[in-house]
Length: 169
Image (tube, rainbow, N blue to C red; front, side):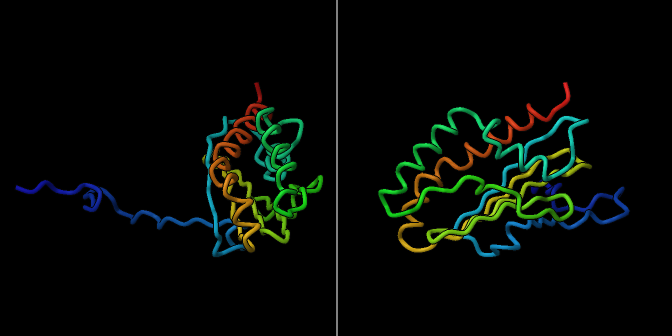
């Protein structure tokens, strides 16, 4: 005897078809075929601001970044010189534009192109950070090996800190 699959069976009470899933990001529009990509989504309490530029600026603010993340970024700045990559300049994570609910941060260098879309879905109160990276040459691949492992943890921590800072008490 087979059991019906409720996921793939239409319900008798549904009158309208469910909307098709879709996902767009300025980061993926800019780098449509990335060598690395991730998306991290966290819920945001009601009453929080909805301006994507404010979220992007807060997430990447030196005053808000957790201490352990600052420490890792400091190590990165020191070690990249060993493989011939220039340290990141100040202000590299500045917002380059805002379209609708998403702010875009863009940075291109000899070893990689980086895009980060920071979006706030106001109807669902979800904060989303989409990262897309195009690696260039062996230096980019070598540089990104440790970054690839730590990136999701770092971004999650930065988002969580920004939520604490921007959430009304």
